[in-house]
Length: 624
Image (cartoon, rainbow, N blue to C red; front, side, top):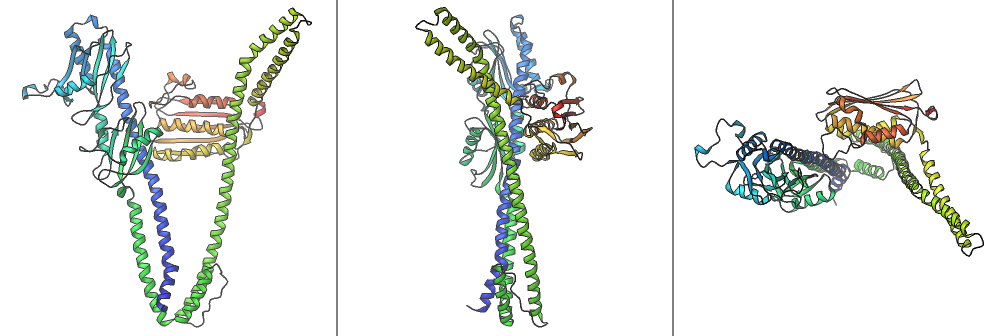
């Protein structure tokens, strides 16, 4: 092999290969991270669409239910009066396309009220009915379809039944609703999800994204594209999403053959699903550019290596050979090999530069090794802390469960066993010690005494678990851990965090995991109170060194004065989102009380809320 080829290969190995490998690694890491980041953004968009759909349908059903009070009782109105009342309701509820009162055989009693498709200009909506302008017009086929899909009248007055969602001729999803008014009288209505279809269309950007809704069977309900359809891997996405009951994102092939990054989120209340997708070339444009840059730079590096190799082969064969030997030694990890650099020409200068480069590489290699050791030590330290925290959580849960089980069993068995031992004593006394059954009764009393001792042991275990004092720790740790946990959500919600921690602070006494749970509940409530962003202030200080004060304040909508007394009640919530059970502040209150502390709430409606947690310091916890 010619020397030029050898020099070229050496330069390729030393200069180009690391660049190529680094570029490939950077491309892969960037692509994976970008997929996770964009995937989370897509999941958030899908969750927003699912939440919007759920709120719209729930709000429409609630408004429809409330409007039924206007027609009750039915027997006080004539047929024409009922029709007029239905017409008034129809005008006040813009999401309705059909409204009627039917009997149990679904025969119309009053109505139906709807805007018919005009057969001539004279049939068009009159200008004096502006509330009907833009309403969905109903054809005879649409009216027949509604009648077929109308659910059976509910059995109980006030109950509501929904049909499965279906699409109209215009592609907008609809729901047939039956609300029992009185015996043999039911309010029948068709709800048109126009706002939902509009929201889906808004999320569909030409060439850059698509959104659609599916029902529980994966059938299409609404699509942002007029001729939109789902096929192939897209159909499997709702199946996996419904099975997981949570948002997910993955790469799928759409009907056009291209790969898209799609996210699915369930509409939990109604068993539907929302999907938001984006072409892979749009989602990963940054990484594709990085790949192109890497290929370009690698190609330039190859050309440069070949040119330099040819020049060096012609002019500096021996010095290069020495430098090559030195480079091989350095590649093997031997930084002590000397590099000869005699003379004052460029080759000698190159040799001296090579020596300086060797020293710099050695220094950086030692720094990297030191950083690796430090990083490994930190990872091991954090892993040990995480394992200890997990062990503490598992132990707390196991002991709490066993304590509750022991207390329950002791409570349930104590009274029956007391009665059993009493009855045995009475029977033994009545029969006398010399009776043939005396020995059997004595054995029964002995076994009952054993059961009583077991019950007492269980009660003692439960009392001991309740009296555990926990451990000493810095309250800064659970506060920071809770803020780190919600860092992404706070940033996504546009909430600025202002954290202030006084130094030094006395230690707290108790369960660090439970107190982190308290802070997490407070931060979660603050995020829900600021849907359009705001400021979250978290401050931690001491009171004369005997107590700790944690204050979490937001600039959200605040708490109405009439509801402040109930915020700590279990299952009470002021949140609009469906699925919120209202246990956060109740659980937090119980944890703070168990740590001999207090939790205080300050709020003005429309001016935010501030929650203050007071805890005794570890030195004073035994006095609290």
